[in-house]
Image (cartoon, rainbow over all chains, first blue to last red; front, top):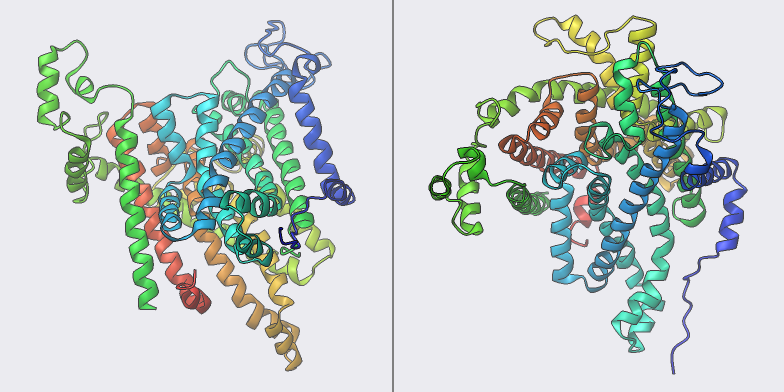
Length: 288
Length: 318
């Protein structure tokens, strides 16, 4: 017979969604973020031109009816390239976030649950990983692996791992002492069952909030790496690459810098708004 | 205090040791055979073997590591392939510029994040609070390099009041130096300021509702005395913590900022080294930044424990 204990693991999807949408900034953030995701997926349909199509009659053209955001030095439509660029940013952001979660959460769970020597070792390892600023890691990895979207995502995800390990571990340390977990242990439940059935579900709220912090960071980081020439390589359209290319024409064609920059700002801003809302709704300790 | 000090010093040393291993393995995994890089393509295999033997590249990795670390610990990071200069000298010559940039950016961040965060917390729910919240969120979301480009566009291209890029050493011409630092400092400091603003605000809201502030109010202190004398002190702890946590972001940000504004600092050295595949410099830069980061974090933790005795007391329980 198993003990019946009050397990607070609850993720009331519907209730959360309703509470999120009742907050105007979060609702706006959700709508904008969803729109950007849809645009990224539907780029071939939504974009007025192909990203590499040249219009040699309109080189460095200011915004016109045919090219609402102008064209670049090769006569390519800035709006279309910005729409296609959303794909690179989303892909890098999602890959990096997935990598960080998939690697960090199991380590954090084990480290926090078993404590002792495993935990000490994990903490020292995260210390060493945290000693390298993000761009230094990215730069080293690019030097080793070569610049590409995948390697940029790898570098971004890798940097997030130690932070996520620590957050997961911290949650587990607290949960481990809760009566429902102690009851399950006393009841003779195997470790795996305690970790996956009692502890993990109760960390999901915090992890979801963290994921919404990591995703906009990753999108911003991908743009930064591509801007520095360490991420997506031209001619593939990416917001960072477009901004690098726009720099020499700031005086004559400033519109080249506006579209990709606004795209990055809108994306990170909307995801941050969603993240802020989720945190307020899901994390009762952060009463603000 | 001494026990906490020793514990943190020990942890820092272990982190440092692990960091040297990461750098060593990282640089050894770089593509290309260092022997061929040194002797040049197309040399006799025998010549390459000789170089391998001479530099100990044929020895097992742990031995190579020990040899490398014993040289590195004396401050010798090798010589740059590109310039032939010692890597240590190259790094040290770039540091003052980056320190000036990062220091001014930190100052800028404190000057705008701290007062705005406090004001938002004290006037919670008012228009000022929403304004501060928006500024914080935009500062957090705006890409550093785009902010740089937009500022150049506005102040250098359109208004023509500030130079677009370039660097003049402070000792050569202080006024020109500062004039050229204005835009980079805003670019580098705004994200940090946004983080500070948000953290100070939520920390301040927490302490304004706490028991000791209620006690201070009950004692009959004026609101001003409560805010400045009690709640503000806790905000300073937040500032120190955030500055420590965001140090890595500041180093990363200086790479981007120096690239946009063509400032010959430490951050630009990193990008130059990678684009030229100057491996000794890459290795030196990675190691140096890890050492600096660990050392500064150690200092921040000590300062933090001084400001907040709870950290020392709780240090053994964690």
